[in-house]
Length: 111
Image (cartoon, rainbow, N blue to C red; front, side):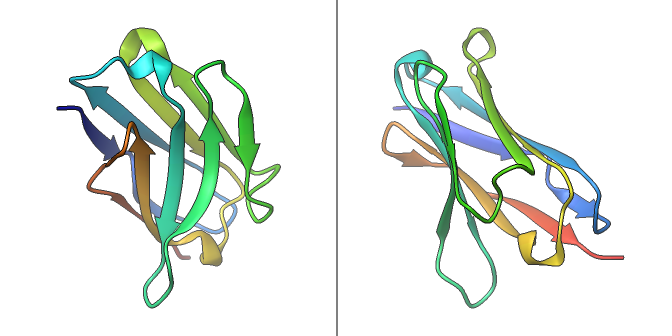
């Protein structure tokens, strides 16, 4: 059964950057789209970005132009590069693919 594991979260200042990673195992990663979601305290989980098996990308309006999703199939890994971070980007970020969720990684944005 496939698994996903996120990493790269932490504390960033407003305007700063972080890069999240999502490593897949136990499945044919390259044939699946990969999605990033986030959930802030007291809020519903929301979709952030998608990269398809062919490399096409889509973004939520709130992150368009600031976040970049990508994938490296040779490493079974997807990334979320987050620039120009804002306080409202603080959340637990989750990776989703092949019907599976990772455990999440915490992103805190504070000065």
